[in-house]
Length: 488
Image (cartoon, rainbow, N blue to C red; front, side, top):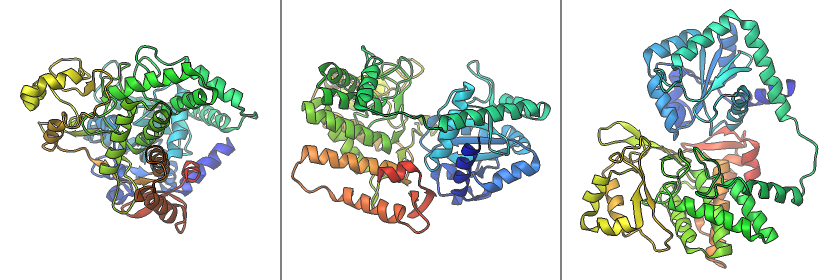
């Protein structure tokens, strides 16, 4: 237990107290987006936990990020609800964390909530003692109650009662939670051999969906690290079965709505096993991992279908995510304003069948031979959905889809999270270097790769009082974690 508390203490030392009224000055677009909430948010700091200890209140910890759709939903339903906010302010010390700036805090409490048996992901909702020990948590909670889930206000009221009426049980739960986290943090003696790595890859490959690719049969994430491990094992061991399994999965994904056929780049995941309904955030780390894996697969296979999506993703990142000072922004928001001016997941990227007919006119038949409209999340055929490719093709469809890009210019573009994150940028420039070495061998690397490396080295890793993880508004912030240092 002491080991984990020491780790958490290090996280505390890396943070700086910002009062709720000062969230507009916080070095995080996500925290700034909550500055007008009636909830009196604190940031993760010694000051906030000292206040919890002094007042005897439990801590309500909410962890999210700017591009997260369900974070926006919970903010709109609960954190801007004056009744809910009044209850939070009276009975809890609310703390808000940007998971991209403070990933170690996020990882710790994701594990804790998983150990409680609750859903993880974002937003993450965790209740802590003033000693930072978790005693219950979950993910998104609706307000009001919906779909068999209790309302967030019900959750808050039940948590308050438990904390006040049975503090002994709360403390015992918190102690068990810390013990579990401490045990997870302990290293396990053993040797990692190539034999074990290959065995792990072969085992992972048996979990691939043989019909639609990827892993799982519900909401689907690409799980690119797993696919990369399988691919590297396939190449190392010359295993055609593993190679074909990865290629088949990639073909399913690059033709699906997971890929933005209009603007390029990949969304983070889909909520269905057929890759038809994505959530629409575009993250820099996701693009970096896609570029790295697609480059490796293309280098081995010369698959033109994969090369097309690879080129379009590289172009998307360069055109839309690169900053003038060097480095690349972290994300585009999932939500943007729809035609009624209301924030909606994917409003910038989705279309109705009627809109497609209007936009393409006499060319709709040509469009419909190569693309189709996926049914939206609610399943009604007249609602907006994303487009997907009908079959394998290697021809560039940018001219065919140009009318959709023109139509998007009349829509509100998604907000950007323009933090420059060390790990994600390091992963990206390594992927870009791999891409250019593969596609334009014996040519100098583009300047943005070297410029970004120099920015990360000088402004973050070697900065006074550093190393830092984030450069935001040209200022270094958030102490670097091991991932940042290792990626450099």
